Amino acid sequence: MRKIIVITGGTGGIGYAVASALAQQGNNIIFQGRDSAKGKKIAMELSSTNGSTARFIAADVSSVDGIKDLATAIKKLTNKIDIFIQATGVLNSERCETKEGLYGSFAVNYLCKFMLDHLLLDELKHGQGKIIIVGGPLRKGATINFNDLHLKTNYSLFKSIGQNQLAIHMHAQEFSKRYGSTIPINVVNAGMVKTGIDRNVKGFMKLVFLVLGPILANSIEKAIINVIALAETGGKDSGYFYPKVAKPAIKEKINLDVAVAVKLWDESLKIGKLNA
Image 1 (tube, helix red, strand yellow):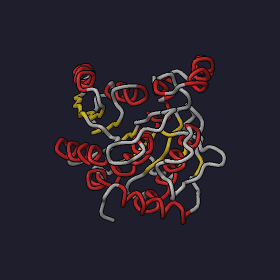
Image 2 (tube, one colour):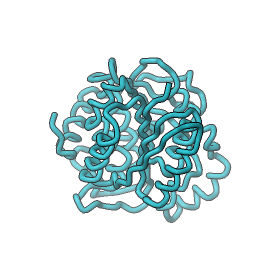
Image 3 (cartoon, one colour):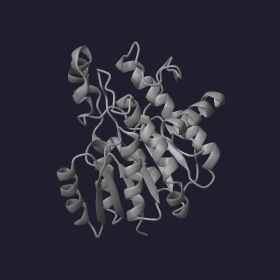
Image 4 (tube, one colour):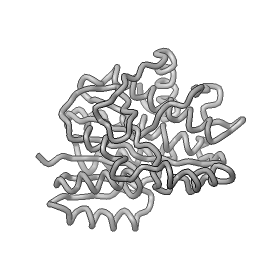
């Protein structure tokens, strides 16, 4: 049965690979990216695949307004979502701040996922949909610094990665507690993949990516196996992390500090200017 699948970050990397694979099954794809020319070209390509239809939305998810505009555009195209795959991601050696005063990486890697899951609740409920977030493992010692969520002091790439991934897991845990019985949400580890996500990484870490990337990186085909498996299954499990690349049978229940997860939820509602 043809499904309506919404994908963020669909013009490159994991998002594009997932969109292509699911288009092969004849699904209706709605995907987001920043590059209009590239997005329109991909939409034509996917729409010629096995009876699939593909529609592209140009949106910048590094800002609250951009995220809300994306949600509005999705609502104009569909009133139901069967599968929502969130695959946006950036890495920045240097701290980048948006015009709204947000830390750009925090907005793209975490906040847009929180906000879109909230803004598209009705469409997900109508489609009896599921949410799949492309994330990664938790870093040892990672914390949510509520006094400096946007990392204005003592910024580092590793601190940024740690906080963003922890925030994603906490979001999946709290969302699952509130809505998981009707809208399953899970986080998938795609591992290291050579997708160009490291283009804003500089200095020593750039060297590490150049040297270790070809050795440690998974193929894009392997990296999306868990995402596709979750998309295809009719299972209702929710609030899990799938830690092993290409092994969808292995999952871990996300079990983090409840009070911190609730506080992050409430703080995210404020930052996103959303109703509780």
